[in-house]
Length: 201
Image (cartoon, rainbow, N blue to C red; front, side, top):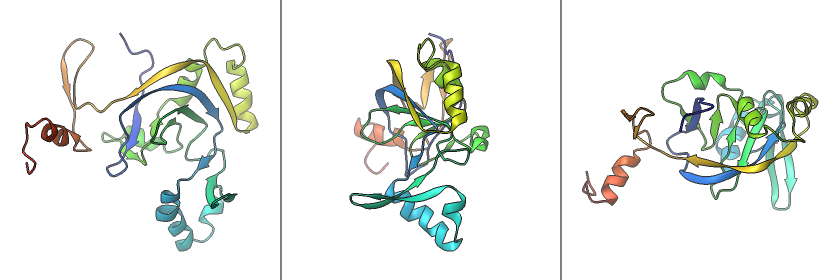
């Protein structure tokens, strides 16, 4: 098998590790709003607002009333943390693949900077590939929806498997071994669980 659409990604930073999982992408959300998790709002965004009044409004955040109280939501648009595309798949971790306005992150060697979701370097290309051949969501309809700015969900004609793995050693396409760093320190945990390393190693 050969890669058909390689791209860089930014994964979760240490403490907000991107989980390993297998699922199926069922939808592409165009112009997605960001429903801010309560932990991010309390630890990061409300302190920024307190230190710099008007920060939330300038960056497109609004307070949304809910049955249990309220939450922050960032409206869709160029400043949105999710960019213009979000790729949804069922999982118990609340993570997804998405676009980002923070393009500088893709040039770094170590790309662990998110809260656990996976930021994609080429989300438009992925959306085009996933919706290819769909009679409803043509490239023109996607372009029109993006330009209009409304949030719409494009369900895929067929779910597409997604696998998120954490490999620090793997064989390349030609069989050569590749080795990577272990930013989450999961190799040590694995070696302890299989008894190669002692608990205090």
